[in-house]
Length: 338
Image (tube, one colour):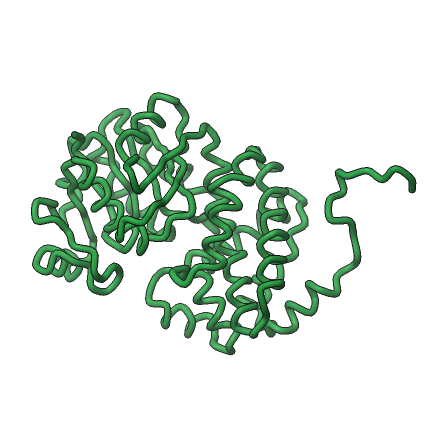
């Protein structure tokens, strides 16, 4: 049994807390929101974000960060990506040397273009930082439906330790040394999911969705490999796997926000209606800047940015994607004759 601190009591933090408790660990959950702490403590259920998933009576709920961090065998950082750095900075005084922090959010910081694990290492240099990602909506994990994820870490020892802590009959965990590839796949797929949702909102069909998924993973892979990620990560669970579920699932907040935008809502109206952080909106500008920095073509990402931030109509964006200059699907494939 491990002593675990979970920082962030939203849908994903709550679902993972219940999973870890099912695995026999002692779990302490922290939230910065006093009302959330009160609700979880008294009602033993997150009625707003994860209704129907009961929180065990012996799971500790706290608003005191030091209580959640100090002395724990490992920490799960589950706050939304825009708050990763600020939360890590607050945690730093309580984190011991080589204490494991596994980040489970997905995003890229717009101002620095840093991944979440890079932000955590910068704020808490004494920590052993890992990531957990994959096609894993909290609503299904909380209901104990079969799910697969990948743990990324610098050392095999850390990866295998976390694998053993999380794995269960309903939560299969693989390991990988490619932290960067895992994080880029998890972050960039949210931008493509916005595009998939926009297409749904416009009334387009399965053909359009399949095109966005396959061309989306091509964009993600081009950039990810150029940045130093491994192609195996982008063709695996944290690449194409996560992209498929985020583009298609009714649980996907990014797809839902895109759907509302496709139906004519503004970006702010869509985010307000979703009622949770839509991380693809925060990652979209960073993705476009990375594409420019590494000289990688990412037309879907470019059009999503134009819709989100430049007032371009979704229908016009789709037309421009369809009518771009003709090209080969894969320039690495060679013709027998020219």
